[in-house]
Image 1 (cartoon, rainbow, N blue to C red):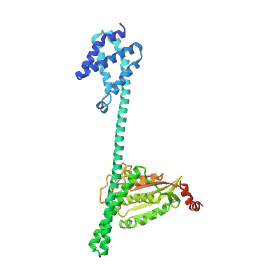
Image 2: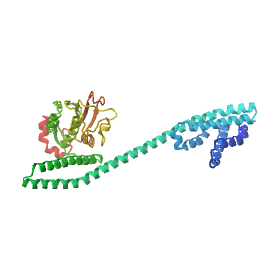
Image 3: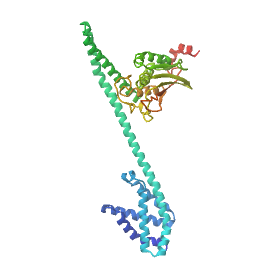
Image 4: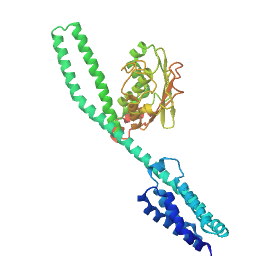
Length: 409
């Protein structure tokens, strides 16, 4: 009796044993019986033709049928199932056939079961890869939806807050004017001044929210004009002089190569971006610390560095600080001031700075050894701006042509 006949002889017993051993519920038995019968039929084709590829289709089907629980647990579920089928086959051979027939059939069939194990491993790995990829895609879509929701909330909130804020500001101005005409008492003046300061603080936050919405929706428009970085930095030094003195900080601005070059950019937006980065350095540098602005020229770019002797930034926080609402994870909220040491805030400044710089075709990143309030390792922010020596708009190029010719001489 040849191997194929022996294989067909033990088939009914193998199917029954497999059904009893592997089916966990009555509702599964019919489907499992059909699956086992199909597998055995394909195994007969393999023995008859010598081509194990007959088994690929059912092995791939089984791999694709693995449940979420199977895929989330330890790998090897399908290989384990194939091993159980092989063990059943060995037992049935020994119980049904004489010793020589059993050994001969086992010897002939074992390579095909080994093939099944190898193929099962490949199919299961691919199925797990597809599952994880799909899970990651779902997570990515959920994060994108969450980010859109945050952007929509910021946009709607900023729009809705503007109207009542304008009303409050208007009525406060009317009240201040009325009291001025009636020789306002000092206590009333203090109260009105507090209202005015609160309005200005709230307007700044709303303006930041509007800018975030513009950046996130790629709607930020630049008013391109001639710009000199050294003038922007000197303007900010004068603007923040009171804060620098009150915090006993030392701000050093180096007249670095490239800072005197006239480039074309949006001066107001660049002042906003540099202000956000500089106030961030002030906020996280203890009183009496050092802040230094330096830079250099690169091929097609001007690099500005803002370094400080502050508390530093942990490596895991460095990418996140440029996200919306990103703040130092280990810092404690001391106040809502933009310039007090470790003062709080909505965490929009660096995100806005990044959006403005990228809208110019530039970039921003940070380097820091780590976070430590005792040793204060400091941080270095790198700001990269392209050296556009002429505006892209032809009308503007014509308008500023005398200045361009004077600069390039």
